[in-house]
Length: 408
Image (cartoon, rainbow, N blue to C red):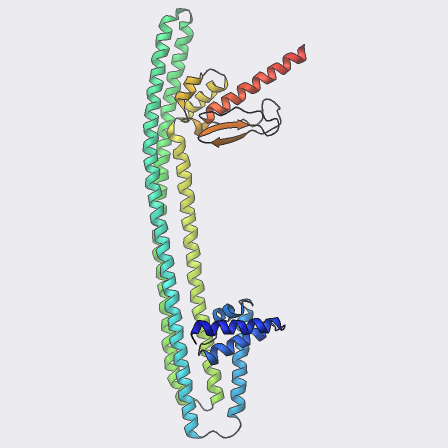
């Protein structure tokens, strides 16, 4: 019979015991007996939990300890029946040594498994670092594209300035006002250039901050990896004195009962040390994930700031004000497109009912602003700016019509 078939047989026996109303402790003891006596496997919390499918992390170790206590009590009864011959006592000592060596081999294999798992987690953390670097490079490429769009916007501003100059030549009656407007636009352009320089300086500081965080994360990763290696080395160093102590216990053992008690205590301490080393590795892995989350948050913040660099905030504010006042035609809105969408603010209240909070929806790359209270809608638009302009314009017409009817 294969090992899987034996395990299935044990599960069927446990299901039968559970159907007869057996408690958790009885199920755990039955699983321990079958594992130890039939399969030759030392009962562990994971193996017992896999078979019984019940019990917590604190209850199952108690059941395993109760199983070993019953084994020791049965051994005491058999050994204490009469005087043990010298040859039998020596054979019992050799058997105890062989059992302890098998326990040490099993502990080492468990340590190797946990070590490979930690190395896998470290490799996953390195992969996340590389992914973050790829995202940073993609963000830098987006910045370059945003700068290209900014240059195109500057070309549009210069074209508008030339059109303004030609309008000043043809409109002599409004020339003084146009000249004042030109001077105001020049001063605004200068202030916009200064703000653009400040934004570029801020972006450079953010890049430096990201680079510093990358260096800090790499340093922390190396530090945590070294701590994990030190913990593993410390666990291995503690195993060697236990082997030496095992040799001394062979020569100094007076009775079988005292030898079994000391070996069980040492084995329990060794398992506790291994568990402490694993818990320390888990804490280091949690700290590494926290640092990775912090880097991801900063990367998203940088991406958000860079997304708003497609057009200068002052120019975007000017375009939004012109759109709200109805001074931009549909063709001009189509030419602007979504360049200023990062700076367009959604109206806090509906101009029609004055109670609803408008909601923006995007379907098939078209934007629509709609009030959930009165179903007032802007209709599908090519950009957020066009949707907001239509929403406010339709609302203003509705309010004006309502006021005229009230006057009548």
